[in-house]
Image (cartoon, rainbow, N blue to C red; front, side):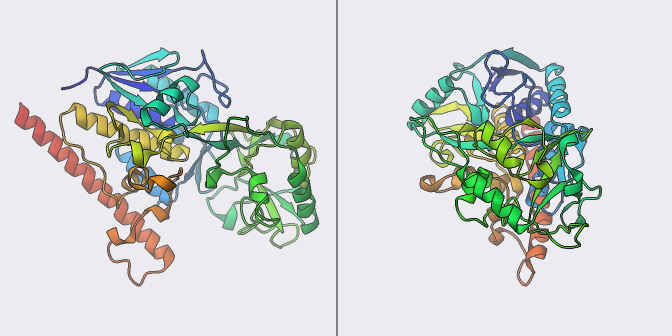
Amino acid sequence: MMSPRVHIVGGGLAGSEAAYFLAEKGISVVLHEMRPAKSTPAHETDQFAELVCSNSLKSQVPHSAPGILKAEMRQFGSLILKCAAETAVPGGDALTVDRDLFAQSITRALKSHPNITIVPGEVAEPFQDEITLFATGPLTSDRLGTWFAKATQTQDLYFYDAIAPIVDASSIDMNSAFLANRYDKGGEEAYINCPFSESEYQTFIDALMVAEKVPPKPFEKEKFFQGCQPIEAIANTGRDSLRFGPMKPVGLIDPRTGQRPYAVVQLRPENLGKTAYNLVGFQTKLKYGEQSKVFRLIPALKNAEFLRLGSIHRNTYVCSPKVLRSDLSLKGHPKVYLAGQITGVEGYLESAACGLLSAIFITQRLQGLPHQAPPVNTGMGAILKQIIGSDPDHFEPTNIHFGLFDPNFFQNLNGLKKDEIRQSIAIQAVQNFTNWRIQTEFERKKANAHSS
């Protein structure tokens, strides 16, 4: 039985991608977004697909793990990647966007689509007898979170995420910084690099370690995703941990000294006009006053004007291996689907890919086709396997990386070096995805011909 329409709750990356895909297939979509009537601790606008943490959609290199995912998503006409290409700003190897123009582009596409109806306001439970796709992201409302907790029989649905500061470009001391991409990759020099001497680095670490932080609420338990930890949490693991993490100087030579810096903070442009820069990897939960004091110990930022300071917010996700079926529908609630960070994927690109997956599976259902997921030797298949096939006792959010690709499902890798293996996996993964897409399209046409 075909449902007459699909409700999508949440207008972020996953919800926007899913809504557009379904609408392009001729399916009636009702897109619910609680902003601006009710906002979140991180959002500032009422635009769809607002980017609140970073303006990067990760690497564009075809043989990188994010590059594999992008190539597959483009085969299904990804709205997110289309709008990202239209609003891109220099970012070295990364696909980085002007976040305001990007959100505006997504919003126009959704609001102008004849098969999409926008309904503002909060949704706290699924719609009776109709398919509901929840793509409410890491900032799911408390009321809906309560429903999720009841539906999944758990009270442990969240971890913490942190937002990096943004600095006014005109306040950066370029006499203490230099333009360069790591290893001179990516064409136009996109990053402003703020180098440290050893003594400057040690002074910075001393101040960071004693700076006052925003404490969690008494009823909340802190659980940080490994790939998005606050810098102070990283620093607590050792004085050199930042120098081997977000402040690593590898691939960079300071033209003033002709040598690699002891440590470096990279700044990435936030917009086409390059009037604002993001402190790359500098997510933080320091109090605002402490941030201004500590971050001005970065030599090039001694007179910095911060356009946005970092903040900490709660992220919500379910234990997907325990509560989701292979088509991303919720066990015990067959007409409820999940997509995006609520499933435990991490990152803008991965959230959009998950939204696309959910939309593909919903379309299969509405067209009366059997569930057919991308194979595990594809980017989207590897992400799906991680979501639904992980050990539920040790499940945590993940982004796309080569660790998700099992070499046993790829051919002719023996004897190859690491880079050659990854290149071969990338080529095979995209081809495997193409073959799967062609096969499923063939079976859809065959089923339609048989039914008519």
